[in-house]
Each structure stands twice: as structure tokens, then as C-alpha cells.
Length: 562
Image 1 (cartoon, rainbow, N blue to C red):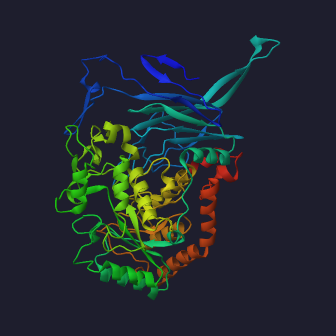
Image 2: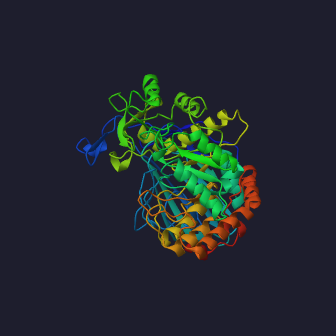
Image 3: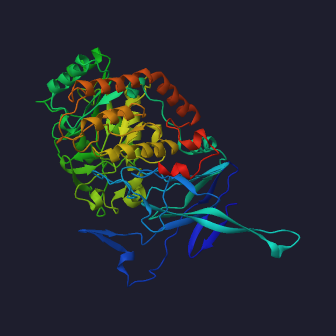
């Protein structure tokens, strides 16, 4: 125990714990002290477009291989718009875990999108295991499933060993930076695996009941009159809903924690109207802060040194919705504490206790950055480079937001926070969704395995934008999406700003009737959904149960179509 193993000039400090999970390696990975190939500048700096990533700490990467004998079905490592069962990558791209703002992402693509959970499950007849690779840097996962010849020796005649062909899946993990910190979960059943993983990362937070109802969103409802008209439309057409949403246009010039004084001059009165009908309001709060000395949030964060820094030591600045922006360093506990305080009623003028929060663009999104995100050599609290922490940035924003809402109610009310970016453990703080999908049948279909994958990796409160965020769905597609969404954990209609309006009553009387029935079915099932969330919270059971849960020992190749 605690011995040091030297391997190719790298040092690993290993520990062994007497528990059902085994951290195979845990410790510091030491950089090589010399350049092995000084003629290769790519080891020390890389170019992406006009950006140069200078690796101040030298070249580094870590990796580990697993051979899973007898296993040919593997699942997990979201988020990808892919089938539920992970595909063989031998002749194609590896699965990438790197949180990115991908508008209109491609389906059946192994490119990383908004969230990353570096957790994989393998299942065979009578046994399920899990591998949790705890690393927040850019990660690639290669999967190669193939038949393998194995031999069984006999005592009587070793030369007459029995030959048997069994499946074997080789899984190769490789991360750009960090340490090797990996846990092998031994099961043996799927239910055991879910519990073991939850001991490491937490269980799904118990949501407030209203958040299990139907949510109505659009980028953007234009003003208070528009909100009131849409709200009245649900009553007029006898369609239940619980939550109205406002996107970035409700703010004063994309300054979060503010209201547009012309379009939303009396936000408290608007909220009181919703309260009178027992409804709630969700507004958006992103982690980029407009560079404006007259904006109190920016001025305070600037004064306290709360922004991510560039490699020269100044504030990192990038372009996002407000224009030139700085980015809160949410890896810093002091920044999170301050950010949580911004949700208090005195700080957030115009807010009430029926207002809840939506964290978006928190991969983080940087419009003119490499791959529309932050440069890897930006500096966080403790002088950690962004490359080390990238995939966990949005996790910290959702954590701080949830804590802020809990503090606001003095611990008396459960928070509701939706986050686009996520990491292992995000389930403790709220809900996630599948991001900027498209109004096509293929995106409705792929949403189901995407949500199943999130569920078995701990994040049960998840959904997809009903109708598709991008484009204009035909009436039948919209109806079918409502019918599917009514049975998914998070149920929200949403669309981008350049689409036609698509409130449920705008597609003719018959389609209105079908959508009304789907939404009412959701409300009929609310006690059941609430019970499922309770079991997810206390017993680590996924809401969306896959075939490997209900038929733990009978999953075969038929499951691969999902």
C-alpha cells in the first residue's frame, strides 16, 4: 500500500481501499523533465486557427487500457447524439468528452457536445461492471469489441487445453492532462452499479413538484404583454402548464440579474400574475459577464479578481451574447459564494420566490474562441490551466446557482436549476437537457437513447426540447414530440428566435386536442413521476429504465438498435 511504481519516467502513487470500488491508480503524473524531441514544436505549442496554445507545463497526457473479457455491450460516457449501446471505434473516431457549444449538432457523431460524464458500464449475462475515469480535461475513449480466443488448462493434460471463443471489449481512455484517478465498480447487478456510482458522485436531487410539469419556453417572449398573452392562451385552450421561461432578451443588454426597462418594466407584477395561477418563472443566467464598469456585477467581480485570467495575468476576455465579456472563475469557492449571493432578493432586483434559474452557455461558450470555447491556457484559481478543468466549469456554475436558491429561501425550498453543461455529479444540483436540437424526426428518435444514457450515468432529470430548438416542425412531428416528451423526466417546449411561433394551439383544432391530451397525460402521471424521483434520490434508481435494468441478465444483441 502507498508504494510508488515507476513506469517510463512517470510516477504513480497507488492506494488500495477495502471497498466495493477500486481506485486502480490515484496520484500525481510527473511531467518529463526534458524535451524528448525538440524538433517537434507540436509538443510544446499547438495552433487552432489563429490561436496558439502554449503548454507552459510541457507536453502531457495520460491513458489506461481495460480488457473486459466476456463483455460485448458497453454503455455510458455521455453526451453524444448516438445510440444507447456504444459503438466499435476501431475503424472510426473515438468518443470525445469535451464540453462544447455545438449549435445543431450532428446525430450519430462521436464529437463531444455540451456535457461530459466519464463513466462507462459494461454488461453481460449475469454481470455488470462500471469504469469511472475521474478527469475533467479533454478525453478520448476508444472501444474495440472483438472475439477473443481463450484457453482452459486441464490438470491431466496441459497440452490438451480447451479452446473457447468469447467476446472481449478493449476500452482505451486517454486524457490530455490531469492525473490517473479511476474507479472500477464491481456490481454485480445494474442496481448495485447505480448505488456504487452514487456513493462516489451523489444521487439525483429531489426536485420541486412544479418542475415535473410542463414548461413553456422560447427565445424570446418579447415583453410582459407577450408573456401575459401566452399565459392566457393556455387557460383559454384548457392546456395545463406550470412554468413560463424567459431567455436572454429579457435583460438590459444581456446583463444578467437585470431586466429590460422598456420590455419588462414591472417584473414583480408579471410574477404576481403567474403566482395567482400557481405558476412559476424561469430566467436565464450565463457565466459570461459584460465588460462594463457601470454594470455592478462586472464592477464587483473585477474589483475582487473573480474572473478567469489569461496567460499574461490579466482578465480573460472573449465575445459572447453581450459582446466583449469576462468569465467568472467558478472553480474558486469564493467566487461561487459571491455568485450564490446574487440570487438573494436584495441583490436581484425584481425577483421573487417564484423565480428560478436556467444556466446556459456554460461549457463555457466563447464565440471567437477555439472551437467556440475558452483557450486551454487560460488560468483558474490555484493557477490551474483551463485544460485541466474544462469539463467541470458548468458543473460549478450549476452548483453555485442551486446553493444561491437554497440560501434565498433559507433552506426551506428546493431549488430548480437547468444547466446545459454538466459533469459527473451534476445530478445533485438539478436538471440538464440535450441542447440545441433540430426540428427533424431523426432528432426526436435520437433523444430517447441520449436520455437513457444520461439516466444510467446518474443524471435522471433530463429532457430534450420538444419540437426541436432549430427549425419549424411539421404539425405531426410536433404532436409526436409532445407525446414522447410527456413521458420524459424534463418536459419543456422550446424554440430559437428565428422560428415560427409554436404554442400548442397554433396548429389547428385536432392537433391542439392531441397536444392537450399528451400534456394532460403528463399531469395524470405526476404522482408516479414524483415517486420515481424519490427512488432516484434515495435509492439511486434511474427514472428511465433500460432493458438492462428490467431484464438484468438477458440483454443480447437486440439491445443494440437503441
